[in-house]
Image (cartoon, rainbow, N blue to C red; front, side, top):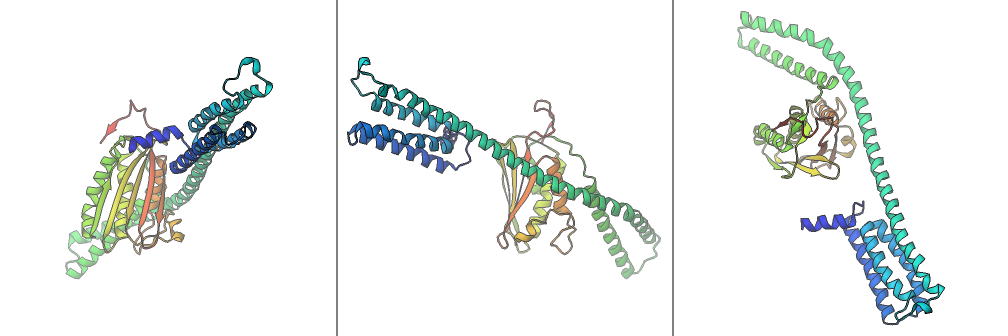
Length: 380
């Protein structure tokens, strides 16, 4: 089945139309050709009517080439040429009996082939223009997100600088009081413990702020992303088990090594998987899938859950810094995740419907500002 799909894709070439549409158009064109050939060979129409009807094949060849590609167009043109020759030059005709009407077949056929060449050239340029337009749109969206991240980063850097120092001093004095035994009563010890935990939590928030403002430059090497998925699955196993979430992974067996920072990619997957688990408080299913896009030379990753989902109005805001729907959330996890993906030359998006779960999808180019394939360091 897979080999048939490959053969069809090569025959019809790369076109934006679905394979079912291209197959249907080509078969319809062949049917029209066979129908016309049948009625002509059975003398159901006169030679003059046959010549006039042959002009209709200009439309069929044009449409077939535009939708299906060069090979189907040239095949239909070649088949039509044999029929047209038999119409313009009847069997048994001698050279002496040729007339200008007979010679008309040559420019007639030349125009057939010219249509195929011109339409295929037009279609190819149309596809290239469409691809470039999509790339420009992606770059524009990335530029907008980078501007937002830059602004948030400047705010985060200021907050971290002003607050981290006094928090460090407070934390130091609390530890000193604990060591001196000032708070022997159990009640005071509990208070100290709560204070220290909150300071620890605040420091973690500030660390996230700093990461958002000054993201670490990816240390890229050639990595097998399926191995990263395995590592992430083992790290979230305990949390998933406690929340009655079943984790399913679907790694692409043909996935090649990818140029990326392994530790940063673990952080991306941990953020997405942890968010998915928290979106399923009553349990559910978490799926992580990888696939290889050969045409665009990139690796696609999809993290899906069966949780409560995200409304359409909120889906466009979830990557904005400080935006969160959780009571104790900071709104930085997905912003940092997006920053890492963008730093790898990729893009991340979400598809969600309330009550039906969410699906986060991102891609990473195979070779993006990495060493040459032969020189890159390979790591598992």
